Image 1 (cartoon, rainbow over the protein chains, first blue to last red):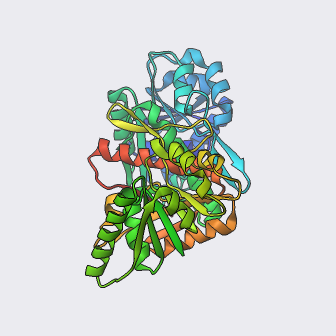
Image 2: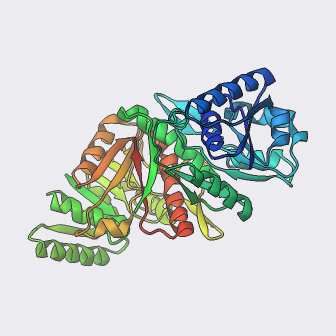
Image 3: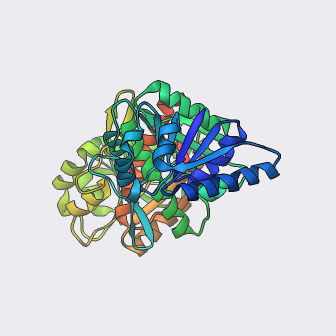
Length: 220
Length: 220
């Protein structure tokens, strides 16, 4: 599958690019500057080569990267998401767009979820893009540093929300391809606000209780 | 410590009453009708007696129960919380009031957090009560059925939020007295909305993925 990672030069874009490339997907890194994207793509190819995995990863500016992908991950800070999507709107036709976006604000030493007027970042993304695009939310709660360290074993639950069942299933399958990520159906896109809220909760609990690289697991 | 459980005849009130009574706390069950509270109190005493634990548990109407407690747990459905608190406002002076309240709405097969205009149920409770009362939020995410089954071993994380550090510490200590409940500092009361949102998320994930009695654990 052709997967574009806007802002794929860092954060969870890096880890997803590396781990999906290992699984044989065609990876495209997007960045505001094409050169930066190409540099990251080369760096990722080299790191994978050292692990015995020779693949081609492309680097484009965000507009071209979005245009080329079947699946487009918005691995950009929430603060820049709306302006980025506005600027490259014409690149979107019928892709699956994955929102890992989380709006949050600092309160004292900790962070709190900052509820957007539309209810969630995922709904904001949906309303910014053409109706033919299918927006799915996922990967909000993953520690980027762990995801991009290929020698680390992951142990995360990924809750996937979306209104189109077929798109949601594709994202859940892509998730399950990464070892020890468990994909869980989170229901409609509107439910995304709860998953988004978990990120500042996890960060706050980590800060306030002296824990590191926290995530949550659903346990029975 | 004198702990009153308003709505202590069911839901998490039952489990907290039983488990704290086992630890030697003075338990008061509150209900809209004193008779119902007394019946539950007697039932709890009998169940504990069978386990070799002879204690006295009192049953009062909610107003008297609230008045008598050092700590008051609002184990009532969110829908009735505001009217209940309005009706018994005069009972509150300087207690620690614990809000496990969660506002949620059904969307299709699943549930979504319903953000109150004040941001969270805990903040609503704070604004309904005198300023001398210290509101702490906790226990939103605990499966009531497991809590009240004393033969079950628990394995839950309880995130505690509150603006008064001393009150928060007391609630965290009360939490830690129950075996296998881990108390985590969740920061100020405003952060409670994130913990409240976890409840409908957990319920939705359980419904949509065929799981039961789910909870979340913070893992490193």
